[in-house]
Image 1 (cartoon, rainbow, N blue to C red):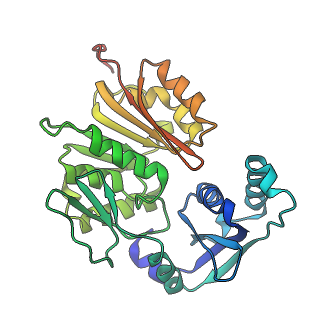
Image 2 (tube, rainbow, N blue to C red):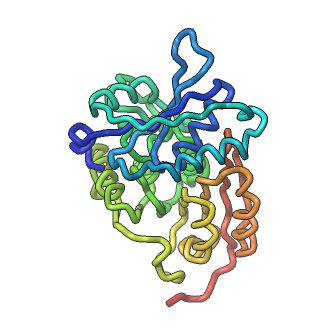
Length: 312
């Protein structure tokens, strides 16, 4: 979605009241279901938190998604959800009200020692060693606040070999945050793609705002339709995607990683991670590190160092 659209287009708030003990996991579940960032706040003198996400197309929320969200909550948290009256609301709000609400939730984020990510309205200055990425929240993932996005950022910063020129591919780029951060840290070349034209547009705008548009190749592509084999390989490949796409497209993903390169897998619920790990280990990838946060588990993997034959 373009930035002009976020100020002019109608916005709907999907929200529900939940016990404070379930605030964080239900925020993650709602965000995943709508493929939008979600947030929560606890009103004064209340023992319930309001979990919300925002959409610009009313058809993106329907009764079936409401039932699915309730089923997920009851499945993952049977004791806490027992007897809970889950009423989900979808109401139209003014776009300006939506924008102001996000300013309460998005704060500067330090990644390692070399990266600072902040919204444009925040006045914080980067330290001497820090590269700055300015990114405002939009109606898609990708401000670095989400656990899976943050893991990828941390691993890019941690695993980069600064004495070498390294390349990076961002699959399912969303807002472009990983690609933009990679350029700021010195990666080159950097390529990013997404099947969603709105994400491609937002990535272009964010890259331009950060002065790196000419350093990222941004395209609209569908991972599920790409040929598995390719001649172009990268030192780092980031795939922050759902577990089913990661498994079904595993060959396509690993064939884009250079021998000995790094593969970052995220967007995975913790109970789904073992199956994803098994797929990629069967393809010769060795797990380097995992991180579990809330309901999410992410992992970094090392590609086999044995040179593979040429591909078509």
